[in-house]
Amino acid sequence: MLQKLFGFDPKVHSIKPEILAGITTFLTMAYILALSPNVLAAAGMDKGALFTTTAVAAAFSTLLMAVYAKLPFALAPGVGLNAFFAYTVCLTMGYSWQFALTAVLIEGIIFIILTITNISEQIVNAIPMSLKYAISAGIGLFIAFIGLQNSQIIVDNPATLVTLGDITHGPALLGMIGILITSVLLILKIRGALLLGIILTTVVGIPLGITHLDAVIGVPPSMEPIFFKFEFDKIFTREMAIIVFTFLFVDIFDTIGTLVGVSNRAGMIDSNGRIPHLKKAFLTDAIGTTAGAVMGSSTITTFVESAAGVAEGGRTGLTSFTTAVCFLVALFLAPFFLAVPGAATAPVLILVGLMMMSQVQKIDFGDYAESIPAFMCIIMMPLSYSISEGIALGLISFVLLHLLSGKFKRITIATWLLAAAFVAKFVTM
Image (cartoon, rainbow, N blue to C red; front, side):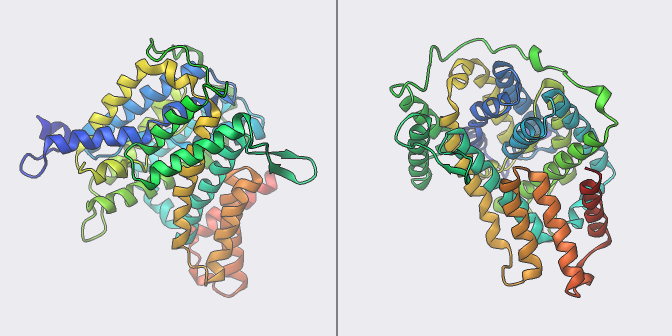
């Protein structure tokens, strides 16, 4: 039965390591239960409903990965995509969260179609490798910047745009303490360091008067305030097309990077560079995003924290099944997760940003035709407060620099088309 459901081979795999691996993966990514409601609530969504939706969407998607793709990967609302949803689409561009959810729904459906028709792989090949690394690094810098803002460590200044906040008291002090605590846990390689860091920082916030905890266990809040809330009358607008493209673009490359990276660490990539059940993993991600939008969630993506479970010996769907069960159990801990202040989750945003920044070391900075577009992509994401603008400027500069320096042979037809699409976006806006 285990072999049929999860691809578990008793001659090769053992049940105990798979279950422990699943619990480990959950512990390393459970911070999303506190983080996602805090981030998306900034867009005006109901925080209680967001907690329930986050847990249910993560459980559903991860369970699908377990029984369909049979891979030890877990899924949940993506951190960077959460930030884009709330801070760029809603707060910066001024669209409603219902508009953003509609874009996520459409993106999920398109992702399904692209996966079934194998177009996803062709889109991936259109992006230069240096920009793929830059996108991950840029998102890391962007979400770290958001974490610094959420904890008021960085505040606005009319003369310099930003400046250091008062780190001697209040949320900024708690944020600094949280960074210290979580960093030490990571350095000591404590399992579940990110989640434990949130818990300890939240506890420290009680005597500081920032954390207000009334209970730990309770009935999950209803998803009704955000369930199936779409603006279908905006589907065929130019603005919707731009947002959908950005969600789709980031979702595809986030998923690609995670699947390749974690599979490589697990030794699951064959001699020809192929990942087993890759198409099924893509389809799981796409279906999860579509179902998540119906529930009221931002884009679902495969979590890089799955590497923690793989490191513990997880190799089959039994690992992801265990993680899914953990998310369902967490539903009844809603009062605790909803009491977590933004200053307690900010350190995780900052440190996850660090982890995503690690991709920058793979960029060849000696080749300016590659490194300058990559740098433009990285630096423009936080400074423009937009992931999509960073990607667009990086790709356009890549094409222009290669064209003007006589290295146009490096530019593929697909890359030309994507760059042209981004130029059209700027012109029409």
